[in-house]
Structure formats: C-alpha cells, structure tokens
Length: 264
Ligand SMILES: [Zn+2]
Ligand SMILES: [Zn+2]
Image (tube, rainbow, N blue to C red; front, top):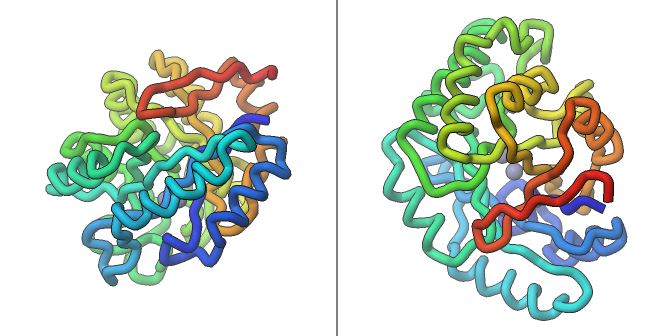
C-alpha cells in the first residue's frame, strides 16, 4: 500500500485524532510507513494552527521508537505559506530534522477561504486571487519539499467547481507549476477533495497532466485526514494517476525524495 504523506493529529487545532490512532489506522491499511504533518501556520488570522515544534518532535519521536519494526513513522509538518515569511518558514522547517515539509496556502489577504462569506466576490474571483497569492508566496518562501493541495480553494466556493477549470485559470496556474518544476518542489495530490464530496482530488487531474507536461516528475500523495481516515480514497486516486501516466509516487525521508513504483 502506498504510504499516506499528509496526516493530522490532535497537535493540529482542527483535529482530535490521537497520534497513536492515526498510526494504528495506517498499520490496518497495510502501510509500511506514514508521514504525520501537523499544521504550523504563522500569522493565521485567529492565531490558531500553531504548534511548538520541539514538543511535537519529541512526542512523534517517542512514537517512532515505539512502532519501530511495525511501521516507519515519519515526522513532517505542514507550514502555511505567507508572503514576507521566508525567514520564519525556513526557521521552523529546519528547527527539527523533519522528514518532509509541505508548503500550503490556507490564507489569502488575511482570509481563509474556508470561511467563504468573508470573501466578497464571485467564486471565480476568489479562485483567481488564491492562485495569485500562491504564486507570490511560492516565490518568496523556501524550505519545503512539496506544494500542498494546489486548488484547495475550490473546495470552499459556493458552487465548488462550477466556475473552475484548469483552462480558465491556466494563465495563473502555469506559472505556479513552472515554479515548482524549476525548483524541484513536488506536487502534492491531496485526496481530501474526494472525501469532501468532489469528483476529483486537489489538484484537478488536468492540473496534474499539465505538471507532467511541463516536466514535473515528483508527485506526493496524502489524504489530509484529520481523523483516522488514513489512505482515504487512495483506491480511487491511484487508478486515476496511472491513467495520467504517473508511474511512481514520491515519498520523503530525511527531506530526500524516495520514489515508490505505483504497481507494487
Ligand atoms: Zn492544508
Ligand atoms: Zn493538511
């Protein structure tokens, strides 16, 4: 079973999942490793989503030892990208020897699109602004190995993907994809789009196809489960990735990419 590289536990403000329950769920799913990636969002508007990286590291290291020989517990972190935060992001990313750092955009212009009503504008306007902010964040920050849930914003539109397609936003999505291909930052495929009732993961398959066309070779996979839903929807997303021509998934260990063949 391909490993789940995007998981939250009760160290994240929005999760009640005990870390051990998450690890046990991965064992039940037949995984040989998993990567826990709790939130660290500097300057999140309400001040939530902060962890003390040292105590997080300590607890996860304890669990890594406890489960050694049964499952390889990798320790990652999901950092919220914000413009002008290059230094704090790098500082956190390097504060402990994390296996994997995901850079994700959760906030644009001080708003989290999760609270849809706060953004006054059409869905399409919100999506465009999110991609513009993402590109700016990407260009100003460093220290992460993958870009998380590229079109996450579409989950929160009033009408989801009615005003969304890759073609419609190609002018803002292509520069994002070029940036990550050039900098060898992996593209994360996040199955939470599917678990939240959409017909596709984040990003949309057309975006994944474009990433491959532009020469991208590193795709990471995560459920973004905030409970014990480890590996959720992998059975739907893996055939879709094979159809797009993806032959391997990239996992990270010690921040180094480890390719894993898809047909195993
Ligand atoms: Zn996220
Ligand atoms: Zn997440």
